[in-house]
Every structure is written in C-alpha cells, then in structure tokens.
Amino acid sequence: MHEETVYEALNDAGGGEGHWAFGTGFDEPLAGVDTTVPEGIDPADLGAYCLMLGDDALVLAQRLTEWITAAPELEEEVAIGNIALDLLGQARLLLARAGSVGVMGRSRERATASIPDEDALAYFRDPDEFRHTPRGGAQRGLRADDDPPARRLDRAAGGRHPPARVP
Image (cartoon, helix red, strand yellow):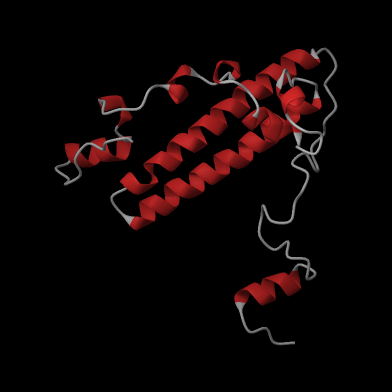
C-alpha cells in the first residue's frame, strides 16, 4: 500500500495505533521503569530525591518557556521549546516516581482520585512545598545572570544581540 503522507507511513509502520512519535499515546509515565525500591534505600529518601529533581525540571521547563519569545532567531525559539518539553517529560517521570513511593504530602488530599500522582504533585502544592534549587525559582528581572550564555558569547564576539529582558 502507498501512503500519501509521511505521517500515514509512520502510523502504518507503528501498527496503526498512532504511536509513531515518542510521547504520544502513552498514559503511564512509569511504563517500563523498575519501580521497586532498591535494598538499603529508604523509600522516603528516594521519593524526596525524585521530588527535588522533578521540581527542578518542572520549574526550569516553565522558565525556558518564558525565554521562547526572547530568542533572536526562530530556530533558537524552537530549540528552547523542545528543551522545555524534554524537561517537562523528565519532570513527569520523576514526579510519578516520587508519588509511587508515597511522597505526596497534602497534594493528594487536594486533588481528586482521577488525577495522576505527577499532576497532583505539579499542580496541587503550595509554592513553599516545592523543593527545586533556588536558582530555578529566582525572581525574574533584568540581570546579567538572566542573560543566556549564548547571548553573552555573541555580544563578546561583537554580535548584535542586546541583553534580554525577562518578563
């Protein structure tokens, strides 16, 4: 059979279930991940560590989305968006792992039973309950350390890009 588009060909090659692209059609973020807690590891410590890493990825993904429109070229906007999406996927996996070992806190009480653990941890916590590194959650504004390294290097080489203003 001859397909009309690349998407049809990819869909047919994947069995016609629409799973041709990573990240589509998957409901369980921990599918294929060994969720047993290794011997000698406290589940609460594992959960707290996954929660910290997940919060870092979640906050950084949100911060990168703020930078998308400040990129000087379309290709850079797309790259920043793709990195943010990758970090969001990492956050989903890590927050789901934290939830699988019972590190939910008050977020499970606030969310309905139909909401997955990773969403409950991402959306139903107070700001002071997030455990990300301080740099990820720093106040926005115009500062030298808010300027992306690529922009600083470009200006140092005589480029045209002024310091970016963060919303």
